[in-house]
Image 1 (cartoon, one colour):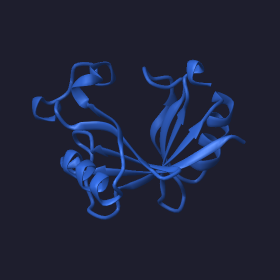
Image 2 (cartoon, one colour):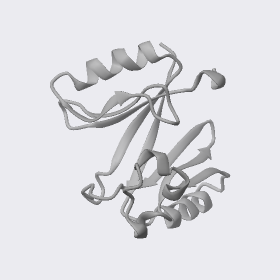
Image 3 (cartoon, rainbow, N blue to C red):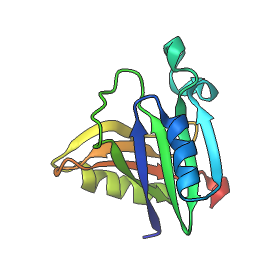
Length: 143
């Protein structure tokens, strides 16, 4: 199975500050920063005004690895220190489906596996041990 696992930090509105901090700590490049207002299609126009400038996704390159960061979405609870998910980056939808089924068995589906504007198959799952996973499949043009 062709898969990469990346730590993904979910922050309480201070992701921009964290991006600058971790970039300086690791003396590394900020690969991307996207704001919630850049992704209105994902929120069907229901985004609170004070969330529009929050980070929906950021990527730092740290050596051969990466670190992803975002602010929590409106209405999501924030528990300091426990807002780390593991992101599974896959090439094939069939692999995403298989891992989604396996990880959700005995656990909880946070966001069902579905096509989004950024992925042919994306989901969030909390496994039976309470570990949260994001599953994302690369669009065909990235393969």
